[in-house]
Length: 123
Image (cartoon, rainbow, N blue to C red):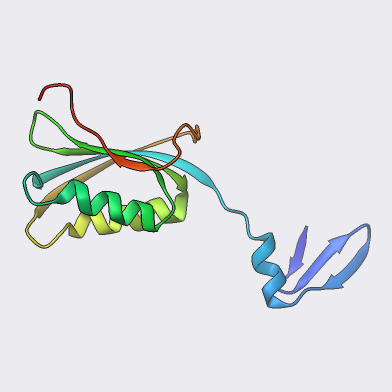
């Protein structure tokens, strides 16, 4: 139980914790997000950029094109990192024009080992 910024209570004894130790106790919430990106997002290396961004954030999952001209992604990992990825997807790579990003949050499943570009079944 955290009492104050730098104190930790354990068995009725209060220990002073340096700031470095507090980061160890920081709770990382795992999450899963199903993301659809609309606009000029196909043929502009959007999937490649998404894969690089997600991998650099230690996220797992996949990204692919859809029949409707959107890019679809499924990302798992720390919720803060997924939110950071969503911010990058809103900007998009240089040649893209992102109009809309839809996010559906789901429960973390941990079913992926890395982040990959996959191919839709309609090609």
